[in-house]
Length: 167
Length: 164
Image 1 (tube, each protein chain N blue to C red):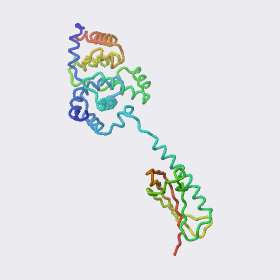
Image 2 (tube, helix red, strand yellow):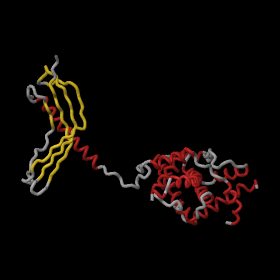
Image 3 (cartoon, rainbow over the protein chains, first blue to last red):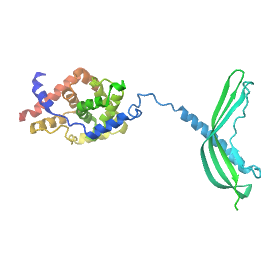
Image 4 (cartoon, rainbow over the protein chains, first blue to last red):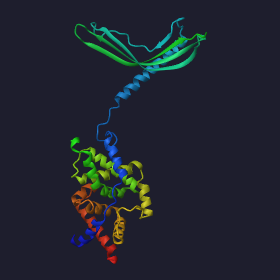
């Protein structure tokens, strides 16, 4: 390799163009950010199951809500009370453990959507205001003797139809 | 370990190695902007994995891997190779800082080297990697790396002889 030593020395005199300030700034920003993008394939992938369950739950709820809305339109509603279409929730029952007693029932409304006025086929002369609620319902049973508890939580959707009168 | 590697660390490290990393990345890219993208991706990836900066062979391997990922991802290899085949002088932007006429000829000669020889020269001359390290970066044997280097220097010498 000695016959190339002079050439190597000449080559070493060449200085590569330095990195731009912009590149340095980009790296600084990238290093300051969470590692999701740049380490893809290194970090364990985020589980997609929660999203799947949510999609499944919301899909089933939406389907049942549609059925109930349809029933609300074609069934005979009470005359003056607001018509509430609600997906069927499991009846609090303690079939597995007779000692379980209903303890708490919690309903969290996380989205309310006013869908405006609609006309029911059965009450064509009176418009109804349709309001849709996305909720999460949590029920809990407890066995006071054994301390065992059972909790069920599921997304739900309610459609409330309120008769509107004009004066 | 994160705390042991401060911002100053990477700044210092990048100031030293950045120019040679960019030079190396140009092997797989059409322009300096693309090379910068590759170097950014590779350097950030390398730094986050807490690798020792002494392991420069791994850093260069990361650059190579990032560049190849980019090529595969964008499916531009065929297009790029077609362009290169049509025009061997696609490296328009200067890759070295202000230099005299003799050095310009040398730089031009380096850029005209076949890619596989040029990358060995870059890793050897401007990064001081051993042939074993070069072999691990390029996934070739140490002997192949050494022979490519000798061929490259031989070609450079031959090119420059009439001017010396």
